[in-house]
Length: 185
View 1 (tube, rainbow, N blue to C red):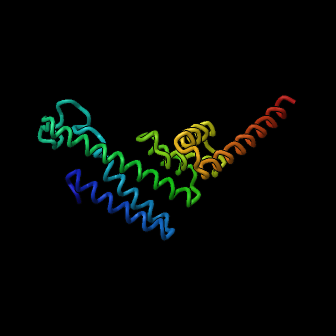
View 2 (cartoon, rainbow, N blue to C red):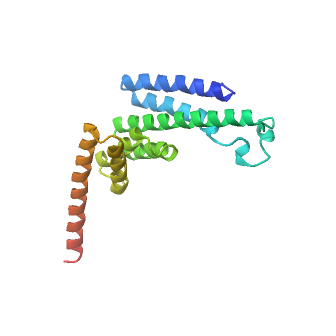
View 3 (cartoon, rainbow, N blue to C red):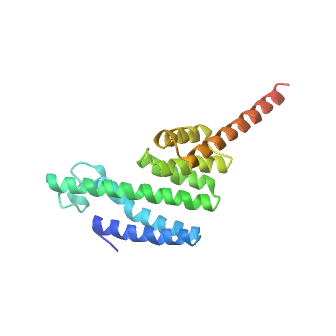
C-alpha cells in the first residue's frame, strides 16, 4: 500500500483506469468498486495535515513540516487530490446513471460539485439524474443546467437536457396544481 501522497495519487490513477475499463465493458458495479477504492485512498490527502489542528502536524506524521517549500508541495498535492476526487465522484455518478440508481448518482455528482462547483460533467450528471429519476430537486437541476449552458451555450446535449427539464418542470407544476385543486375543492 502506498504511503506517500505521490504514491497514493499514482495508485489511485491506476485504480481509476481499471474502473474506466470496467465502464467500457459495461460492468458498472465493478467500476463503482474501483472508483470507491480510489476515493478512499485519495480523500485523506485533501485534508490539512494534523487533522487541521494547529501545532499537531508533527504528531500526525508530518515531522513538523513548517518550511514554505514543504507547505507549497503539500498544497499542490491537496489540489491534485481534490481534482482526482472530482473525477472519481463524477465517474461514480455516471456509473450510477447507467445502473439507473438516480439518487446515488445525485449524491456522487453533488460530492464532485462540492469540491469543484464549475465541474460541467458533474452538474450535467446531477441534472440528468434528477430528470431521469423523476425525483430530486428540480431547482437544483435548473441551476446546474443554467450553469452548464452558460459555460457551453452551443452544446446540443445540454440544450436537450434543458428542454427535458422544462418539460419535467411543467409536468410537476401541473401535478401540483391538480393536487391543490383537489384539496381545496
